[in-house]
Length: 145
Image (cartoon, rainbow, N blue to C red; front, side, top):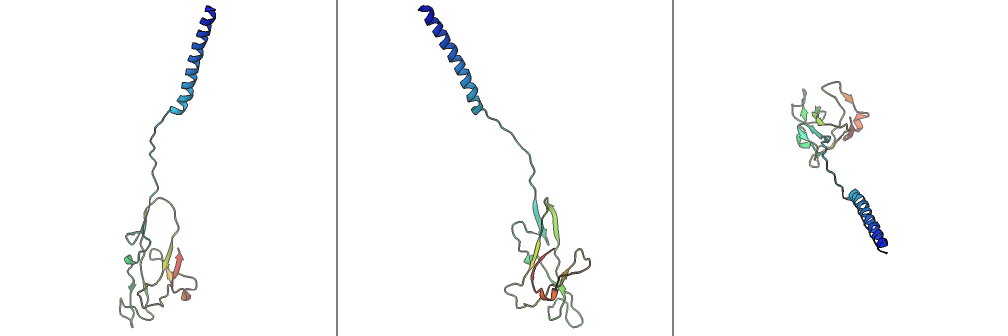
């Protein structure tokens, strides 16, 4: 009987040690922690039109200065019937790391009394003027360049 108790006690201790070992192995899977650090650059998107950033604001009307060159009947800088003028949009894409599309929308100011301006075309880098399709019917609108 004494031997039986000793064997039982020995088996109980071995079982307890094995159980503790298994419990620590299982618990270690859930208690393990890791840390790390990543240095990943994020793409920039900062486009300027006439030195005005459009990142947070797409209205650049304050940065546009229309130029009316005048002719023999109309003084320079004056808008009148048949006057021809233009405005420059200088785009700076140097702070943009991703590709994009842009649409230019032209519309008169709500305070303007001139309502019959016609957009006839555009040029890139003072190149050849590209006419808008059916430009005489395009009083204002959106143009995807």
